[in-house]
Amino acid sequence: MPVTEGTHAQRISAERARYVAAGMATPRLVVAAAEGARITDVDGRSFIDFAGGIGCQNTGHRHAAVVEAVKEQADRYLHQCFMVGTYEPYVEVCKRLAELSPCGPGEQRSILVNSGAEAVENAVKIARAATGRPAVVVFDGAFHGRTLLAMTMTSKVKPYKAGFGPFAPEVYRAPVPYPHHGVSSDDAIAALEHLFKADVDPSTVACVVLEPVQGEGGFVTMPADYPARLAELCRAHGILYVDDEVQSGVGRTGTMWAIEHYEGVEPDLLVSGKSIGGGLPLAGVTGRAEVMDAVAPGGLGGTFGGNPLSCAAALAVLDVVSDEGFLAQARELGETLRARLDDIASRVQDIGEVRGLGPMLAFELAERTPDRAKAVVDAAFERGLVLLSCGLYGNVIRLLPPLTISPDELDEGLGILEESLGA
Ligand SMILES: Cc1ncc(COP(=O)(O)O)c(C=O)c1O
Image (cartoon, rainbow, N blue to C red):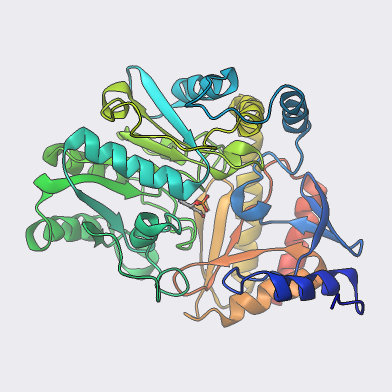
């Protein structure tokens, strides 16, 4: 029976509960339209968007260049499968990724896939093929996706892993530096060395996979020295360094890739996703030719990976984001946000830490339960702000607004955040 009472949002939500599996977490927002940093719901309510569909709208909803590129591409062809017919937009995205790659000198190659999880899994396949080794080292607080290997690599039992085992073999976990909770870079390096003594022979490790700023894990930000020290340890053991920038990449931290904030580190493989497609599904793996080409023809691929519409969108996104003016504006946004968050934190007693890189910022609430963060997210929604929490304990509030957000919208959103925190 169709539901006929209540608001339009309530009716659609009721239909959702009736027809969509409960395993998909249910938001209160029911979207009608979105533009820039604003979302309008089906009842005409306007929201400031500090979520961006979980970090997928660095260039804002419906960026004009993205919409135009997608429309033009839709008029040519929608799908070919890159293993059946070569099409230029796919090649062009790989060319742009090669130009923008942080993976050191030399020829760079890429593959394009549909999701971050798929890209992470492919990065591991490539690392295994390139090294001839089976093991993978990941970190506390990591989130790499929901498919079997990516879920195994992910570090949060509920809701991501509980009941979904058995997990993939040969995945080992090390502590991540987390100064706010007393884990320094020295501690994390010592723990990794211990892992290599106690649990896994480093000569069997294909790769480590690390987010420079952990996304779902709570925007835990790698200290300045850690990535280079990890890379050095990797080099000593012939292990490849995989940089998962699905959430932190494409301008989110004020540089194209977050790893650019760190000196002395050139990852072997870069995993990109989310915002690279401007709202369309796209993710990639990029690396030096000798690593990427370790896989024989046919070993990588997928029916829809690097879909033409997604590639057309990505070309527009990469043009917009690689512009130094855009990145400078993103860094300015980061400074404004940081100053406002520090100010809020000085007035809200239970904010433990404000952290992040550039405009990729979050604050951690002192209480290690999700209750307060959830209440803040709910209160913000009531006032017209879409906000997300994250972290192993669900007690971190992260800000992922479009980097194109106007000063007025930013101010309005932060005002709502303050009120919702009771600042
Ligand atoms: C760092 C990181 N890696 C991988 C993923 C998985 O991406 P997807 O949800 O597109 O599979 C995510 C998603 O949040 C992520 O933040």
